[in-house]
Length: 307
Ligand code: ADP
Image (cartoon, rainbow, N blue to C red; front, top):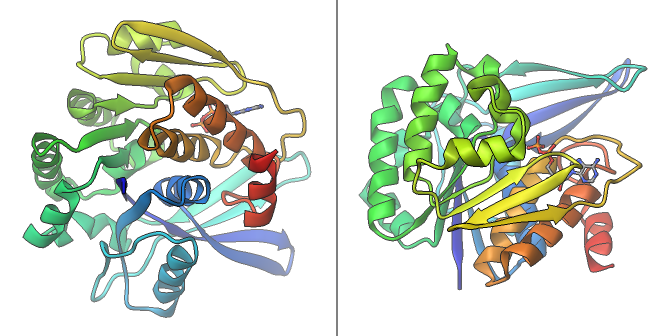
């Protein structure tokens, strides 16, 4: 049985439904990816590695993970901290705005919980995934320890997977981000960047420029996402361009990239070729953006994937 670990943060989501009503759910890039991977590839053991609190919302979040068949052995409960939260509102023109309360979240402490037992378990995985958001939320004081964990896992033969998922507001400076991303690209066996994410950081404006930028790194598998335009992959020296069928009824693009990542990695762990993994991942992402919110209803998602 194949095994993947997603380290990072899942938050409490509050969505404004009307002036007086908020809808509460849970979302966060690594969690979203884990959900979509597991829904498409139930035979792959899919774990989220994070820290929550001891509060009722943390308990509900844990229950939600379990209801999505996500392995929670490495979901830790911090004594005093609580989960991060965000509020999302869509105006009359369809523009979304967000407010976050995540600066003191339990997830920032996740590295502190990675003891010898946890490392032993992680070392037996096939893949270890983190994103630029995971890197940004891990406390600065824990970064050195985080990179030690990554090195140890890579040495143990676990494939290191990185999606840059750049969120400027989570970083102190561009220099800090670049320093961390340099380490991430150095360790990565697979990377799944979006063109837009890297434009601000490295002044790269096309899939070709992203591939060129990543050339000096020893990354086995590069998957460049570019919205509805195309996906370009590079495995060894083999470059492939994959056509994406644009979706016309786009409702909410939240988690398109997350769904893509989860399903792509699930497919690769299930021995699918790069091109069929891209097609499945693009189908999942295209389905998710036709639904509001990060997590599409399971029945609608499964039905669309079965077509
Ligand atoms: P991110 O959400 O990380 O910024 P993208 O915007 O590149 O990533 O989208 C991720 C994937 O979602 C794309 O590779 C594509 O497969 C799918 N996707 C995004 N927008 C569309 C669209 N309008 N029509 C169809 N598929 C889309």
